[in-house]
Length: 377
Image (cartoon, rainbow, N blue to C red; front, side, top):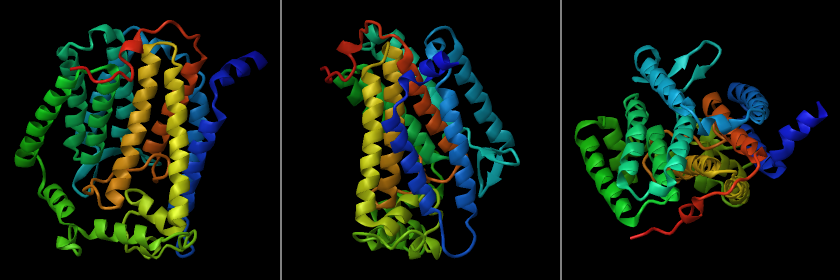
């Protein structure tokens, strides 16, 4: 038993775990209110405990099976089936079907889909690292991503769809894409965006983007959330208003402050000092993940850890960009802080898998020529 525990915790990173848990507790504190019920607080506390337990369970398996055989592809097919199931049998909330209602909790499939996509792309690029300069591999990996992207986008969940795109794009970059291929990707993306605007975007999504270009054009309508969010962030000043005393959030001027706008609620109550602490903790989290990526046993482990870092960074900066009025409102959570079980479980498990992969004996890697490589003409 002692030998098993020593093996289990050989890759454990107490600094990373402290940063991750501290971020979760900051989010929990932001949900606390001195007025009314604290139902979100109570449920989130349960989710944090549950997710922490799953984090330690995620340290146990030997994930080398993911880089061999067809397991990751079967996981990809499973996610597609679940996303199709959501489209037909999911819970309908305000015209969107994004999750299964399982009674005691709701499962938002787009969250584990991000982790499955990371594993799939890590395996794909790790097996083809010597041929990554061939543009067809960019296209094939893009098709894998596009399938999940489309199913998530049609829910509609534009925020999660964009996270999926950034995961793919970030992993393509660190795998060693050529500079001219970057230009082609941006050209294809621009054409696709134009097509989505013309034929796929709903009117309310267009309104959000137009409000982003002119935030004060309709502060009582489509721009209300963005306006109240920026007010909340600014009103926190240097030291904030105190835990549970945020007026914009706790008096419900700021909607969904437990999820999509929790950074604004946090900034209001903790002020600039709290925001700096928040950024420091998240920087430590990403630094430790990148450290584990650099020490990965093979290209798969390196790319998987980098994919997790990209996943968390995309969520973090998109959420904050929305909350301070730099990006259109798309309904995106911030890692570890926002309320919700699906995303919290996914994030804890993802980090647990990164640490579990550190138990392997490092082998000679050929990623030196592609990982963190400069763009090549």
